Amino acid sequence: MLPRLFSLCSVAHQVAFLSAIEAAQGLEMTKPIAMHRLTAVVAERLTELIRGLFVAGLELDQESAPAVRSMIQASTTLSGAVETVPEAVRRDVIAHVKAALRALGISGEHQPPAPGSVLSAYLTRCDREVLSLPAADQFFLTPADDLEIVTRLMAEGTAYSEAPELCGRVPETGVWARRAQREQILSAGASGAARVRARIGEIARLTCWLDARRDAPDNGVVASYRLGERRGAAAVECARGRLHHAVKLDEEGRIVRFEYLAPTEWNFHGRGPLVRSLKGALLSAGRQGQDAVRTLVGAFDPCVGFSLSFREASHA
Image (cartoon, rainbow, N blue to C red; front, side, top):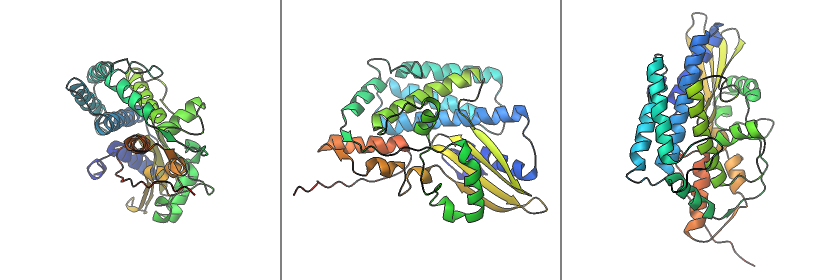
């Protein structure tokens, strides 16, 4: 049912739920099932990152639009969590995705988009958007936080899931947080353009992983936890960040409690990373300044609806 209830990151929700149920039952995932779920989650993350970058952020020309359409359709084939995709089909899908990425200017995780590509032009526009960000503190959600989060989620329910925090702080989750955990070279003020580049890099990174499927692309992409008798939880690293599920079963195995915490609740929290980034920021007058804010908000999560209102600073 879950893929029919969630239009975004539905496979991540399904995998988190199944993993939490199995943990509550004291069951262990077999290696083939674990690899299948990991592949499905990574493929869906790739699809959602592509959709958010190209559909929400860019105006595509007649040459680019078919490449994006082909890429989304191909990567969606790998994210079906019900049946394992045959190896020949997987290889064909990856070949389609890589060809489409090359057509759009993406050749590698740490390589800039090809000159003259639609992505190169988009990044040039982003670089021109003037938004002077304050030196906000950056702290990030990691798999090491899972147990505290799911324990509080089970104990406090929606009171926690609607306004989560860890020791009074609200960490960031998602593409930028994943990059920070891998590279630890980030500046204190992450601009919208820098975040878009990180998204492009992750698209290339996930494509390479789906091609080789060796070590997991990130730590704890799918993790499950037994919280006690008939209680279990799981965490899944999806496109927007770390997703948590927690369940409780009765003696006959029926679900009597189900809680989940979406990554959006961290990033768009009233004291969260987006607010910290924008609070005290200075932007240029006119359209460029407004576009800079839109780019930054979209880089956190392009699928969250928002409206912007601006007022001129008063001068004494």
